[in-house]
Amino acid sequence: MDGVINVYKEKGYTSHDVVAIVRKTLNIKKVGHTGTLDPDAEGVLPVCIGSATKLADYIMAERKSYRAVMAFGAETTTQDGSGEITQRFEYDFDESRLIEAVKSFIGEQEQLPPMYSAIKVNGKKLYELAREGKEIERKKRKITIYDIRIVDIMPPDRAVIDIDCSKGTYIRSLCFDIGRKLGWGAYMAELTRTSTGRFKLENAVKLDEFKNAAAEGNAEKYIIPCDDVLTDYKKLFVAKSANKYLYNGGKIYKNRLSFDGEEPKIGETVLGYDCENKLVGIYSYYYDETKDSTFIKPVRLML
Image 1 (spheres, one colour):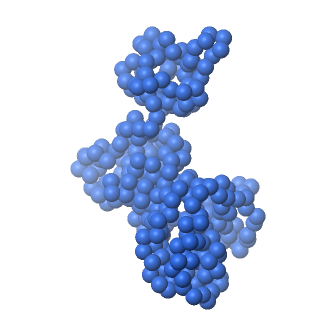
Image 2 (image 1 turned 90 degrees about the vertical axis):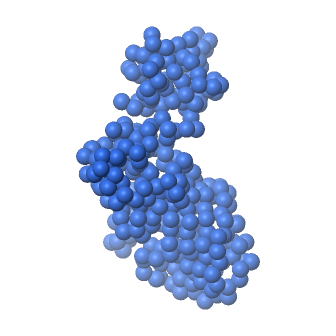
Image 3 (image 1 turned 45 degrees about the vertical axis):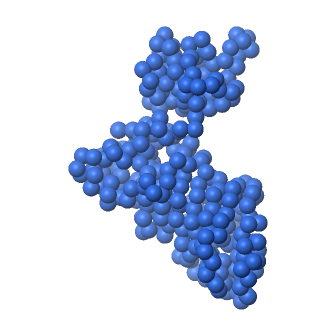
């Protein structure tokens, strides 16, 4: 049983709770999620099972989309509604200023991760240090906000925004930074992840629905096969004479390869299939000057 389940994580569950429930439901050991959602957040949480756990890094690297509710007039310890208020602000609500401030965050930038996060520093998670009352210096991380759309404005203290962003973006910190820029103070009151790459909210399955399907022997209808997950990557197929090299992780040169479409570029990441069209792994496409030929070499085998 290998593939990815597009789980709708509901409020109150941790991402680890979801993994544990899927593991128990399917009675399978190899289960992992593809990007933490806080307990108060909800939405898309792709869960990998079996050999698909080796795809987790690739899924996590894809673009993500969120809908967030910002609350103005205060900052909290956690930068969201679960924390204690650390400071209150008086301000005059100005819709045009809000729109201008929000739009100014589009593009590549550096973001300071919140103390209440799972990032490890010297082997300890930041949120563990934060709970001890400690605040330590953190390094800013490069992120990209591809777009922000204001969905609704509810004067004097709320706004709903949709965000398309890169891996590693903290929406809590984005709300905090918008509040700081305005001088109004802000925290994230609600959060829904609406997509991770090809996984969309409208196609996500809630845990109870998945458990019911599994009890009826129909769990497979929610399991997306591995080669349907990485649809943006080109496919390569090896000749029967090269099958053993594919499974052993050896180099395979162009004369034993066939392409599904145009030939990949040098350095491109591709999916490698055996002579019976079974996905074996993720490969890079290289050029060998000594043989004047291209070849593939494994990045990650799905075995």
